[in-house]
Image 1: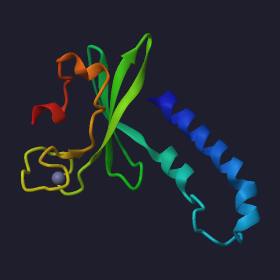
Image 2: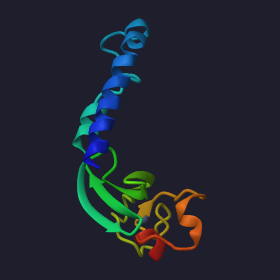
Image 3: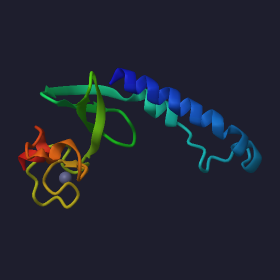
Length: 134
Ligand SMILES: [Zn+2]
């Protein structure tokens, strides 16, 4: 994940630099609209809180990527590395705790997000994680 964080930070810098001519042409220097102000600082601020590894993948919970309180990345093993399969964000009402059936946001899971409909999880073997324990 640290490699991912570093690569994302570099990508954000590249995107911001590529937008500079566009910004200079159409926006006054003090106009913040669509400026993406703080995006690099937010990207650089994300830290890993917990890792759950299992055969074929892992779940990584991170925090401090504003505006999200926490994110849960679902990783799948690909050859000798991994890829992000999907990402959930923590329900702001339930704060990652499952069981609140009254919550319309996370539907009692504590996290919000949907796994992809196709891919590795369609072999009938549910991966670990709160989403699958509902
Ligand atoms: Zn909730």
